[in-house]
Length: 337
Image (tube, rainbow, N blue to C red; front, side, top):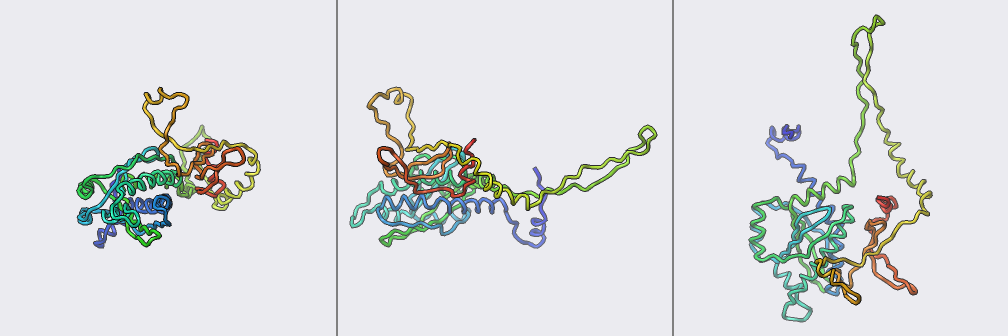
């Protein structure tokens, strides 16, 4: 492990300044990019569940520290979800309990409907995982969210064990209700997100020619000294790299007639072996996806869109409602993997 200080760190020590943590900066940027790309999944689910127009925007993010424990003195309603697949970790979401009760309360009713927010969070997490899969380019699934008991103490304890980041969202519902809620991510999750985004956008490296050297290594059978030179590699011209997309545009015509397999995924579920062995004609397999959920559209197994099922003449079809990319190169990426 290289423990040498960088020049920036040395300057900070000499001037009494703060040493900048580039790792934390990368993780914060990764979470900001992920939140911006996935917030619509939560917004759509809120609107469909409450039956009113709803908008959610990212209002800020910060790093939680030991002093942040004071912010968990007020009652909160929190949920924990475990992710699997391309990213394996736990993530958290919490509301002030007063706001959670307001969301659970139907219009004009005095009593709260305890499962309203739970249902919204459950379905939002599924959409969030699908959006995350599209943003990060890997398949990610999420377990059913679990409501935490004694949430305030749980987060205070968690703060002592791990570095945590928090992203704040503002929720506005058509009837005028407004509140903030938060997602909390361990640093281990943020690091995985940063690595995925880094793989999708690799930094361009300049390849410089090695400095030419020569060395006299002695006599060769009386024929005189032998000169040895290091190999010189030319640098790649940025102009040549810039032609890559143009080449794609010109060559795509050669493959426009190549058929690709389009699959529409209605949903999925997990069943123990005993239930699968008991299946028979007439058996019903209940999927995890709600009836109003959109279906996935995959091209050669790659998720590219979501939509709703329709009937065209006597055949089923899908009306596209969300397209994860409009870039032709991205749509075709991985089609032959």
